[in-house]
Length: 118
Image 1 (cartoon, one colour):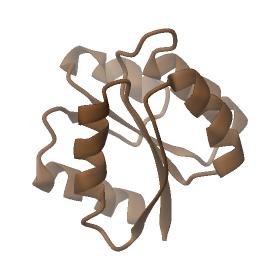
Image 2 (spheres, one colour):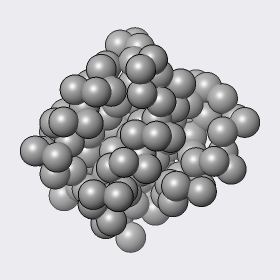
Image 3 (tube, helix red, strand yellow):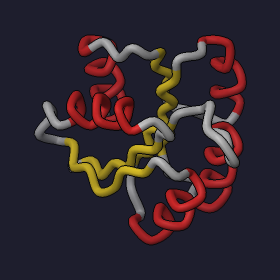
Image 4 (cartoon, one colour):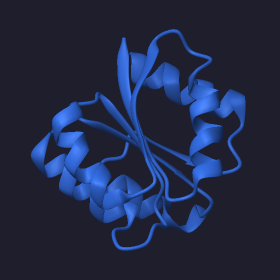
């Protein structure tokens, strides 16, 4: 079972991602956050295997958040889910497992979930 946390400052985007991930028996959602600062605190407590993370968020962007999370927990997997393609290189610089461009396509998310389960 893969334990995941979702972080996106836009509730509709969070709902859409949750809907798609709920299609997988192997995925257990243990947290959803629209506030990246709250998410950062709670992720330490929740100890997920994977964090699905938006990049363009107020106060703390996803790239900075990922770097901070991965500094604390090296075996955490980060997947960026964003509307912007131009952050892709930066995302992989912080060792993201994958990078999904919104709107989410089911077949693309399936590839990501399969990669994470390996």
